[in-house]
Image 1 (cartoon, helix red, strand yellow):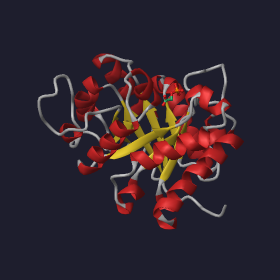
Image 2 (cartoon, protein in one colour; image 1 turned 135 degrees about the vertical axis):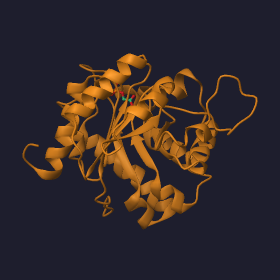
Image 3 (tube, protein in one colour; image 1 turned 180 degrees about the vertical axis):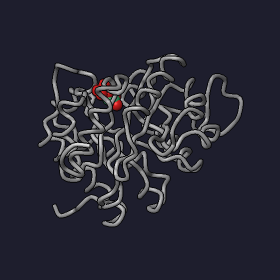
Image 4 (cartoon, helix red, strand yellow; image 1 turned 90 degrees about the vertical axis):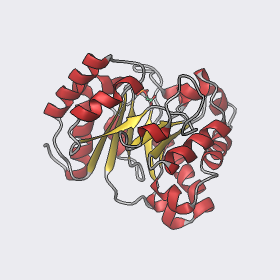
Length: 266
Ligand code: PGA
């Protein structure tokens, strides 16, 4: 296939999941800010818990980092006890992770709900990082392409092609998430899935959109194996979970992204 990814900035996203209270989050950000420099071609994004987004937005060095929400509710306002909307987050975050497998599995998020969240994020000026990926069972049954196709087509259904252009898609095989020391996806296989995802975008929205959409890999990425994924043709970055709450590991991944971009050390 002769689709090429745009030479856009490498995206390194840290998903802190349900870790770190306010003071722990502030300390980790402080350490990352000391350790990570300003890189023109590398974009570093932090996705802390909803609770600490606001304090971190005051502390964060915006020349180095951008913030992402891990989730939000698709209605802007209303009688929805316990929810926080994309509308409320629009001045605080640049990105929102949507459709993460942990939300699909533990919180029963359906394809339809994810479509609504993607539309709401875009409507409120927030860039979705749409997570897609197959379970082990689906993988074994040979259903991966169908799963990816369904997840992508439904999630993007409400968007115009201009809006799709800005989207980030993270390919995260569910069986490879947080396995550290366990099963890992092989970069060659990841490449095939990423090509397939880009081909879906090509078929639906045309070449310019397919070339512009950024596609990340996620699944037990740490500083030792990040380079294998970041070297994949058409891979625009990584979505990091477990390793992102350790400042040495996370900054090691950013260093790897830097070396691959510029060669040598920083
Ligand atoms: P992991 O998480 O790096 O711990 O596998 C990735 C993710 O869930 O996005």
